[in-house]
Image 1: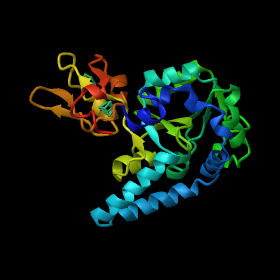
Image 2: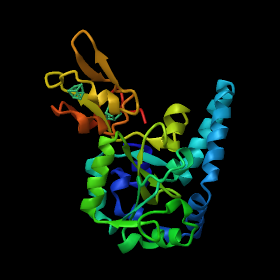
Image 3: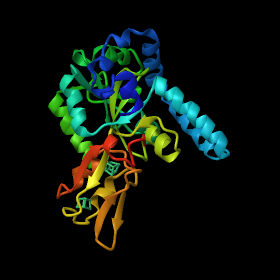
Image 4: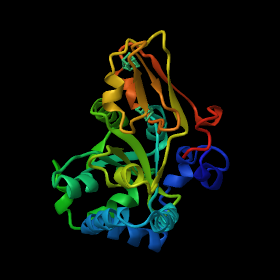
Length: 281
Ligand code: SF4
Ligand code: SF4
């Protein structure tokens, strides 16, 4: 269990607790202001990434100290966790509505609209979260409908997420003033700022999944399709036996590798039961 499960989930998976998606949490004015500022000012993300690049050149002890401060601050405000698609389906099963919006990270990194982000709410039509976004400048949310938000059925949303998996994108849940979860994103290492911060700059702003992948050597054909989609470099090919294995300390447990394996050779195991990865978050 990650620390949020203990702190916000009473020992169960915190992101599967309906209370962490409630509109009641959104009545907190501090949280509402944070959401407004987050979406109204994407340029802040660009400046954050420039600071990280400068930090990479600092001596290790300074980088480590500042990194710990950033991680600790983010855990309170905007922190994520990798979640496999089966559990995203469970989340879609209990929320009242799902709206799709343009990804703010891709707006910054690609300067393109990529509709990879999903707002979830216990209420219909995106609840108060949608009303907060509707009050903002929508220039970065331009999309097929006027508000920039598309309401999707649960079936449409899960089908879109399966398409994202085939693109190699990894599903993550995100807090806005923890523990309130307002969004599900589909991340990759090149364009997602949170993943860059966590993986490229080694300053975690998201937890790994509660799982770790394992390959059945008897079913593996050695095609290496799974290596192509793994964002975390966790899959190792052995030329001697022409099969792949998982580096359990590197694996984020996203399960994306499964979506491209024709022989279904990959499965996810509970992280707690994998000694090498149980305490790696
Ligand atoms: S995609 Fe499946 S069969 Fe191909 S290398 Fe990976 S585990 Fe083996
Ligand atoms: S090996 Fe681990 S990190 Fe890589 S795609 Fe599979 S589950 Fe995700």
